[in-house]
Length: 130
Image (cartoon, rainbow, N blue to C red):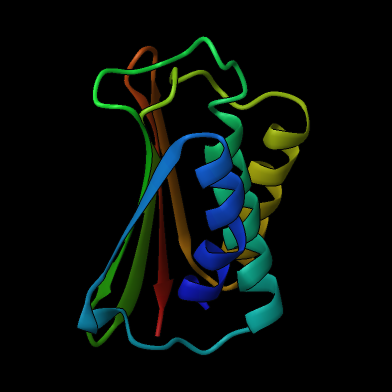
């Protein structure tokens, strides 16, 4: 699921000069839930990370990048999506997408945390029970 979601944005990211790195650990494993809705949540969050670089003038040191990390243990799976964009709160359709992702995670009894620091980027963490 995670690999498919990342693959779906890879060409758009490359065209925009954004490097996408994936660090998926063995512990990520599988969870039970509505795969279509969880994929929708991932798609929305990855679109928001891409959208953080809408302003082509924003060029962070080290280049534009999105990091997708997945790990977990016997009780939960965690996915973290971060970018080194300008760190602004999502606006417009990106804000709606993040809000939808938050609701979809909550519907799976998961935890959703988001942090955005101006000039440093944004990070979203999803923790889903097994």
